[in-house]
Length: 498
Image 1 (cartoon, rainbow, N blue to C red):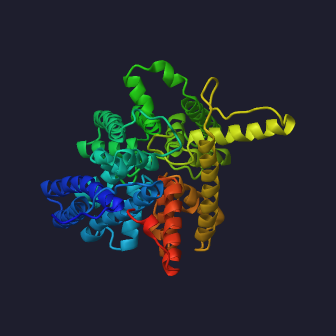
Image 2 (cartoon, one colour):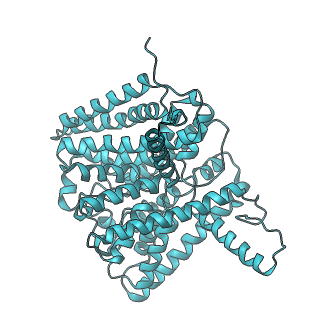
Image 3 (cartoon, helix red, strand yellow):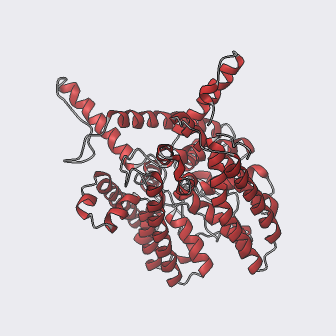
């Protein structure tokens, strides 16, 4: 038997491709059943995905020793490859003929951003197969392609746990069990349950089965892709549907561990959760300000105002009304919510509530030490809560710095392509916070107007936002060091097996 390569990235790409090929096979079958024109291209795309999966699974093996550097590099490479593979169906079907725009669409799907190069009536006629594939990329990306791979890859042991840590959005240390594959299965159970409940609710409100399923995919994943060009504007006069969707968007941006503890009956530990209280409080404050300002200005009713605010805050990206004529205070609150996002351990993007809490506590402690320099202070996220470890605090501060640096470079880069500063700021925040809808000149939702260079900038921003910057930064540094060491003739075995 031929020896398999000890390549972690190849193995992850194989299992991740196997997972995504299942969704693509369903999309192909759906296209044939509805007599759509894209059946054959979708089948070809499925075979390509299956071939990559076979090469990775049967051609690669888990290395004997897995270092953290290897984990971050493998996760980043896997995401890049999967988004490139996900662009193939768009190109082969002709729905998006430009390969860069197809990669943009695929990346926006898997990273649950929701920005789209498809708009107008053309989006309403892409067919059931491509529509299902487009929505399923967000559902798969919401839980994370690597988490899905770990579910089928218990042989990694401790490496598997590190993979879940590299994939999980946020600095949370809340682990269900010490076994990575068990964690992944429980996360998937909560995720699937929320999706089914959302689909049943949407179907009960008059959506077709296809619309209900695809919309539930993108709601629970806080992704925002819609099979209609008008998103949920058609249902702006259905308060029950909007209220229900508001709750499901909020559920998607909640730590999945909260639902698991609720299922286990551990209610006291839920309310003690400092991040959950801050998250619910921030939703209440933001919705109250926006709804009050809009009602005073007479531009939107409270339900649509709350729906839009939660859509921004949870980084979902659904739209029921236009916000172009909203007062400045409402637009400012929407921009701030784009940065914060929801809870750690959820499908949402942004900085995360927990990181904001930790940074706020660090600032308070530093101000206190200016007055009482000998006082002993600790970082906590709630009364009676355990002290946040120093390594977590350092990682949070490093993340904020890296986020700001990348955000500034991306804003400048987007502005250089002719966009005004307000549009550039909102667009970059949209991509890095994985929200999809934005403010300014791109609020109409057609991202195909971006020049190729600007689209590439936002592809990097979307990947960095979903991977929370650190894995991509480690990967870039690893590759740079590998190139430098190779050019100097040094031993590069330390970088092997990634």
